[in-house]
Amino acid sequence: MKRLFRSRENRMLLGVLGGIGEYFSVDPTIVRVIYLIIMFATAFLPLTLLYFLLYLIIPEKDIY
Image (tube, rainbow, N blue to C red; front, top):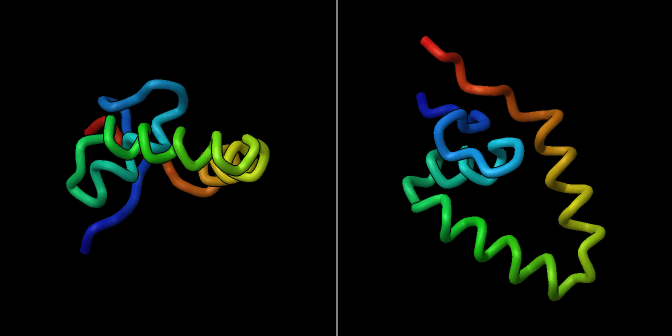
């Protein structure tokens, strides 16, 4: 079963978008660009809050 984790390898800030990219087998850069486009279109606040909420909910990938 596939699980969603925050990424340790594809991390720019907290690893949330890198983990989403790894989960969907998409380049994390594409996920980040899409996130930024939507964030600018919605005046920052909703997706910024969502990002930090996901940071609290999604566990970090184990090193092992």
